[in-house]
Image 1 (tube, one colour):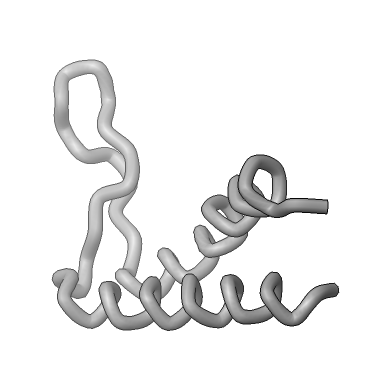
Image 2: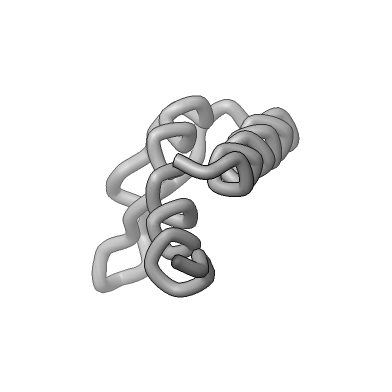
Length: 64
């Protein structure tokens, strides 16, 4: 892994962790067809979403 890739991963992780502290304790993550939230999680579960933007970076913006 290149130094730049590690830097991008650390910056993304820092941003996600920083943004989590501005969210309420319970965050709706899924809505049914009527618009009512049917899956509500603790805000810290959103840390698990970090691989999504990093994988997009790896696929489209990383120069080989």
